[in-house]
Amino acid sequence: KDPKVGDIIVFRYPQNPSVHYIKRCMGVPGDTVQIINKQVYINGKKVNEPYAYFSSSTIYPRNTQIPNITTPYGSRDNWGPVKVPPHEYFVMGDNRDNSYDSRFWGFVPRYYIKGEPFIIYFSIHDWKINFNRILKIINTNAQDGR
Image (cartoon, rainbow, N blue to C red; front, side):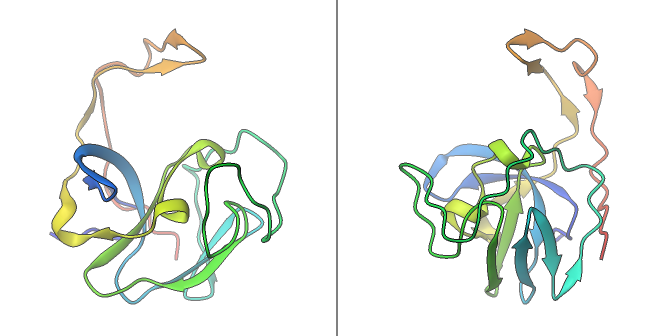
């Protein structure tokens, strides 16, 4: 099945297809995605994102350059608008301030998407094992806030 906005997906990293990533689908083919002051908008509508985590209150203006990372569409906090091409998807990590995702390296082709994760096998937070998350079942149902 094709991913919907809000679904968590497993996919091959477009810049190194031998590596698999897990991120949340935040834009499907035909959607126009924009980020304004860390808030995601799809087709002009603000997305409700109860799953998003922000580790910093700093908001980078659109023209901010992050060392060693270039993006033609703006900073991590003010990005786009960009229309998602046919057969491609826009993905973001839930830990928004520390996620290397479509804001930096672009869209994920449909044929790179492998499926949905179903369990958290191991978890570390602040360099400590997070026992509360180990072997936790993942709810991958879309939480589409459009």
